[in-house]
Structure formats: C-alpha cells, structure tokens
Image (cartoon, rainbow, N blue to C red; front, side, top):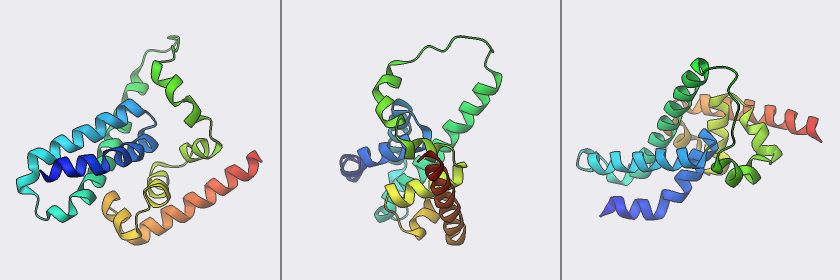
Length: 159
C-alpha cells in the first residue's frame, strides 16, 4: 500500500523534523505516528496521492504546533514549586541539546524556527515551506532571513 511505502521512506525524516519543532523525541514520534494514522484513514479522500508527502509534512508541522500550544497551557497552569525530575528521554537527547546551534534555534520565535528547520534541515523549497506552514512565499523569505540574522547574532555572541 502507498501509505506503507511513504512510512518506510519518510518516517525517520519526519520524526527528525518534529523533534526540532517539539524538542522531544517521544512526542515527535507520536506526532508523526498520529499523522500517518490520519493519512491512512483519509487516503481515499486524498485528492492527489502524489502530494501525500507534502500533506504529511504540513500535518506534522500543524500537529507539532498543537503540541506546543498544549504544553504552553499545561505549563501556565502547572503547580509551582514541584521539583523537576529528569526523564529517561532527557539523557537520550542530552547530546543533541548541548549543541550551540540547537540552543540558538530554540530561542527563535516559532515561525522563524519552523522556516529554518524546513529550509535547512528538511531541504525544502520556499514553495514547499509555504505550503507546509500555510503562509506565503514572501513570508517564508521574511521568516528565514530574520531567523538567520538572529541565529548569526546569538552564535557570534557565544564565540
């Protein structure tokens, strides 16, 4: 089946994309898995199966945004003063989090971070990024340029 082929070919790259957006491997895997389940259920309704990968990317970005919104609400209403206990995932992704570039990327506004991740990590064109993010190509250029300038500034201060 076509969904199985897409899963085999693109699951890992979509998880890496989601990890950069949601900053958590387990959640990223859930986001991508849920996206594939949704695509599988809606496969017959998909207008152009050749655009399924673009649809998957857009769904991953949108579901990642939902996860981040949910986290923000949970953090806003979380009880204060509870001790933080590191989870098992923290140790596994600790090496990734130590990178200065990743830290600088995390400091960017969401749209700038998404545009840079899709452009330089996902190697997508401006048109593909615009489609995945649901914005215009001009907005992609703007977010990318601003994000690169901010990254450059932060990394220059670190060195």
